[in-house]
Amino acid sequence: MEWFAAPEYWLSRLLVQRLLAALYLIGFLAAAAQFRALIGTRGMLPVPRFTARVPWRHAPGLFHLHYSDRFFAAVCWTGAALSAALVGGAGDLVPLWAAMPLWAVLWALYLSIVNVGQTWYSFGWESLLLEAGFLAVFLGNEDTAPPVLVLWLLRWLVFRVEFGAGLIKLRGDSCWRDLTCLRFHHETQPMPGPLSWFFHHLPAPLHRVEAAANHVTQLVVPVGLLLPQPVAGYAAWIVIATQLWLVASGNFAWLNWLTITLALSAVDTARLGAPAPPAYPGTPVWYLVLVIALTAAVAVLSYWPVRNMVSRGQVMNRSFNRLHLVNTYGAFGSVNRIRQEVVVEGTEEAVVTPHTVWKEYGFKGKPGDVRRLPRQYAPYHLRLDWLMWFAGISPAYARPWFLPFVARLLVNDPATLRLLRHNPFPGSPPTHVRATLHLYRFTDWRELRETGAWWHRTALHEYLEPVNLDTLTRSGYRPPLGRRIRTVPISRRKGEQGHPPGPPG
View (cartoon, one colour):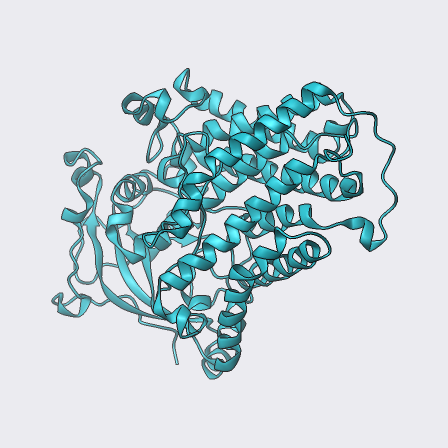
């Protein structure tokens, strides 16, 4: 069965499996660290409330059978331990029939988390990790040569990730067509990194080159992945280089690292001088049948993402089945021209007056303190910080969870405070919390030298009027958020001073 085996890809398979397991490990660790505040029993969007209204067939997983915070934590730590074992090569230390269930369990555990994660887990890279993890079940181990069909399915996955993203940009925002999107993107992206300020200040012609190169990389290069070697290998290296550029310029959780990992499946390491592959035994018939069945299933399920890609009404990051298999992907079909950030503050004063002193909460990743250089967090995923970026775009994105978040600040909820970088009320909780919307922009070189500030910010309007526990209790913690947001410019509020619009000087 020479047509089925590709022993020369043994090193590519090893790299894909080990890196994929490492990304699973990060995903499980992030879930373990954040779930209590986000979706725990007393979280902002509790899992029990979700499973009570959404049947198992619409969100299959373990937590419809049983949920408790302790059980959820056990699932996370079990997934983390299994991921770590696979990173260390456990999949190659057991027979093929035992290695495949290890990957299947990993996939099933993370699927259970994603399917109850609600808006906190609504990102495209969740589906990408699940789809890649499901294919990894069939990649084999040292008992068999890498299967050609699964390697091609991994290439097909990378093609959909890149080509879908390229199409959504070309059809979406006009700035992608006139090559001006990168003038704004580095500043307005969800979570800038430590180099984003410098990328933003590249000369305008280089921003146009960035945008043009993006089109080539996402609309032309992916076709090369589906061609024979050495073309597929060259295309894979271009994808990898582009993803490393994105890693350097921002924080996109594990999206870029996962795309790099999958692209390695198209690299023929034998051409790079890798050691000769080991002598593999014959392929078991049962394994051959499973791989062929998988290929046929992916071919059938590919109908929906292909139809979406060729449609004028293309959508981004859509799963067409509850198992998150063979999805459609895409990113930044539109680019914000300005950056709006929600600044959350509290006070210890019993009565709010125009002279009330407000203290600001600090977030780990999203911009806040104008003098704080953005940090590098990817591939770790700060879910609250990402949702705060969406909240700044529109209150509608925050409607399900923002007031529950504020309510937990008013009681100094330990799980919620662990999601933050700085709590200005370590001794006792604040009496009131409010939120204001600010316009953020990167400073220029002169402002950076004179003030030491990476950002300049200007207060726009009140996002959430000051509330206390009594206010939220009367509303049951779950009022329609839009009724509580008053978009009244701060300058029109009599006697009250807004937050300083920017750094001194």
